[in-house]
Image 1 (cartoon, helix red, strand yellow):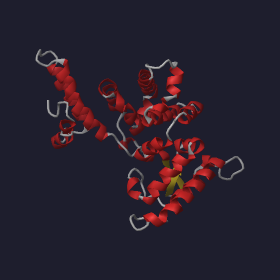
Image 2: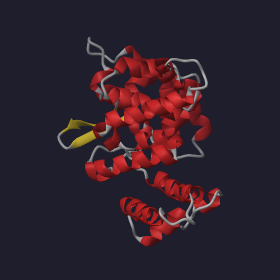
Image 3: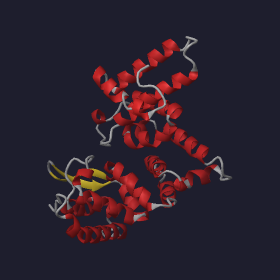
Image 4: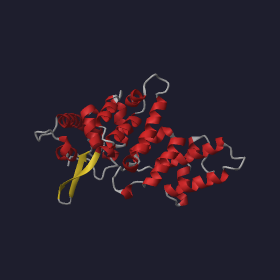
Length: 293
């Protein structure tokens, strides 16, 4: 099997190999599994070499996961393929399950119960060495991977369990690590809001507003970074600007309080964002293209 072996340099050959084949990811998985099934009964193909074959496939699939997080079906993987991917990642690359969840709105919307089961199992296995109860393990994924925690927060929000999402997010020990995770999946923070007929602008998602409540400095840091360096915002449909992101606070309905003004959480993030941005402009202005409008 091509691109097998224990060295990562061999796994990286999977992408050019599969790209050259002209097959899409769904076809690659189908072809790979048919070949694996065909060799299953052959004595020379024992389990260890077969497992090494999967390393190249999983490396390729991680690179093919959508990063735009759009809701349009044509932008994401279909339900059947998403379910196949979940089975593959659970068995052969459990450490990347959170990346799969963060990348696919299809999984979060249509396979929510199955995904929650897999994610909870992963977190419980990680916490097996401690004496924590199952609920404590789920709520304290912080001392571990921020990507796991972020994935679980998204799943809780999808299920309507806002309080549990708040608990998981509050348990994050290192906000700096959360910033790294949010920057990698910054598309999850934004949605498109219609402001006029046929005119849309960036607004904030429920996830962003929850982060504004729990860890406002982390959200402000991500906003500052993508404004100072718009090339980081490759998942957004437009270049993030100072005016555009400031406007997002004003046009996101749930960012408002019952009195009609911006909520205290949104106001705090906006203040931190503006202070941080303006403080860093002098040292960044010559190096990057900063969009104010």
